[in-house]
Length: 160
Image (cartoon, rainbow, N blue to C red; front, side, top):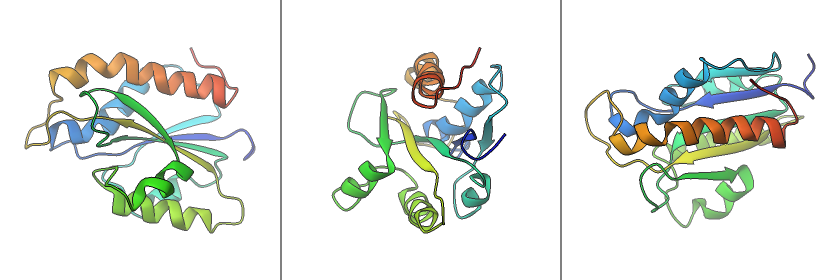
């Protein structure tokens, strides 16, 4: 496998804050799917600079994260890194936007940075607890299908 083919999917979130942990819950669900050998999935925890190491050698990166979009809970919105730059100063788009924005900025300084997308999910409840809200549990099939479709259509790799 070479860099041209490598796709990395990173779920971000805090499992102790209910819907804030959606990225990690989605990664756990993706582990149940047979993914192509050129697709790696990682639990990125609450983000930070360690995410740069997880992206090493990737041509494409998909982050899965709770994103405040103002839409109905469970709504999936896809952002490119360019979209994040254009709205970053206008509103807070993510519950860990400082860390993720810094990671994206630093990654762009690399010699051959990966193409980055964020699959954002509108949370309902951010509070102490380890379970997702009913709305996000019900949205999980749509979240997983969105990620699998991104892999197949955008990145031209198939999953089963």
